[in-house]
Image 1: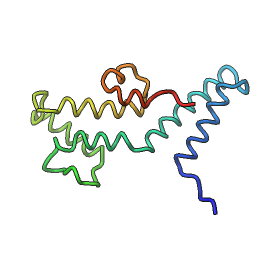
Image 2: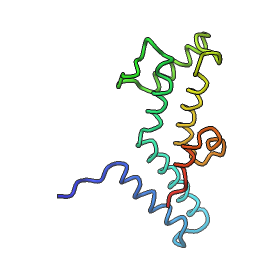
Image 3: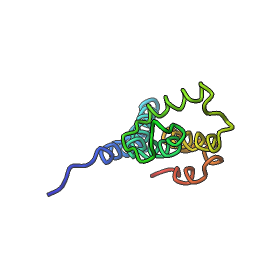
Image 4: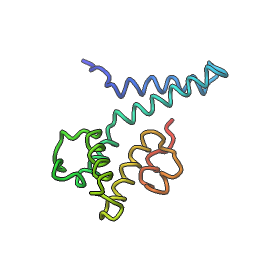
Length: 138
């Protein structure tokens, strides 16, 4: 018995279909442009569904929010973690002088950029490993 395709597989199939339309001769002009935009949006959805950026961000930032969060806390929501970090920075509890904080913030930012625009030029300079994974997919 065949299982149902996953959400990621469905999104990938639609993205590939739209990208094929945009690159082929089936569509022209404005329609081809819109198909390409839609395919790019679905590529972002694919990367979001993978959940890797959230995991990287949680790993990078959790230790700076102690004692509220623990690194083994599987229930950490990224939005809550960001709010806690922002509050600590605004209060002056965390500054650029905090050991490792700038590197953690860069890692979290690179993970987000890898979702939104993996070919962003500065991303390659900041994190070559992420940029290598961002090679164009066909």
